[in-house]
Length: 370
Image 1 (tube, one colour):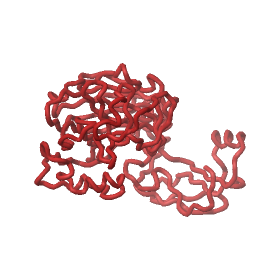
Image 2 (tube, helix red, strand yellow):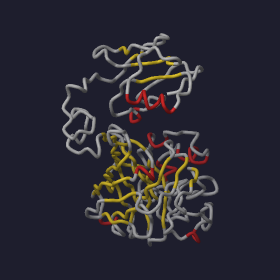
Image 3 (cartoon, rainbow, N blue to C red):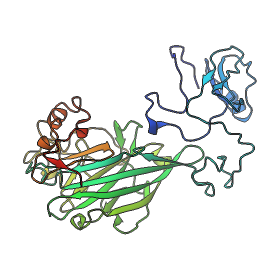
């Protein structure tokens, strides 16, 4: 790692914002910080043999040989700061069994007998879920009650011993169905820049899927599946549970999935800012109450920003939403979400800067739990 003399605190093993689901799942050992660029020969040498600590430019060197306590000494001859250890535990890898030989001790390996994967991270973490809320009368507002289709989802991401993303699992429950228009649901996989502010379309078969009941590969959309195809109205409280394999050489280490519903297959409703799939009818955009963009390209390799100009009205009111919460109060039938959640309008019209936790503040007179 290169040295930045403006940094006051350096953290290993998590993002700087302390987000619980952004912690590194794996082992750390022999971390070095240099204040100069290493040559290719030096990189190879230090990959195969640990530094002595006396090397020129080595300003941080944590061997993690202490074995106990909450301090990791800095072994660089230049001195520097010891490391404070929070929330991690010590492991002697030389004495731990490693059944599949992937370099991850069985104790830390989620799949101790499968060398192709080692770590499993669940999003969102803890007792939270993704709630995908959809209003199916797009491009018109209609009753705007956001109780037409609500999916409740957890996403698992699998990484191998090198901490490379190799696949995952999706568990999605039909949390609520309002009305009786036949509908299906879909999920599309895209490459992310890590913060999901930039997404990239992947070539065909960058993601492959298991296909248990109620899950089918979408033959019209690359790297996508159909859930409960046109049968959601009969599937409340049912779940799908399936795995996917991820081509890390193409998709890298960060993925993003978008969930959507459809009436006829080409009449799709996505979350605000998410683009339609290539199966959607673009002629519907900009009609009714919609103020979305009216053209788009789905060429693999194309990168686009999120949010993009889709599934919104002229005042930024959306037809699809994703919230992360332990539970979600459902707007009563034909009760606008603006009444069920009094903070919603200001949040939407501000572009998300006002009332970011609007979904935690329902009005019990206009909303209910399932």
